[in-house]
Image (tube, rainbow, N blue to C red):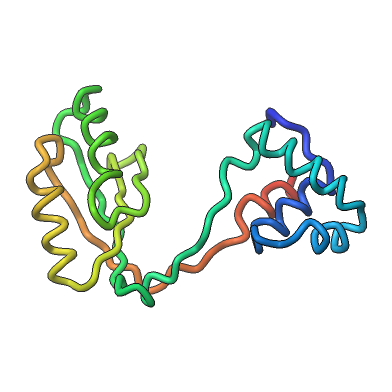
Length: 159
């Protein structure tokens, strides 16, 4: 069950903001066929209720010299709270880490990382993962292409 009830206008507003978070209130209002004040009030409500957690940007990693992308699966030797807490604390701060996924299944964590080249990726694994006391095994998978999905927008429509 959802914490916040979203109507059709809220869902469409979220889709529009997801596509272009810099869209003006006027543009959003025109697309939604509502008043600009309605858009402003709805955005304020979506932010205050935590539905919109933050506004952000998407960086083209190739253009800034980080063309290599990988998903590194990690297994922890002893599943105890201290080891898990240490990895959850440390991994997001390592250079090049985009996301850290704490998993159920054969891997305990999957770390999404970018690097300048294969040597830099190797250095990342050696310097951060191989030396981390909680990690006993890693497997690195290169990402050929990262295609965004329709995600939450289509999941909401399925309800």
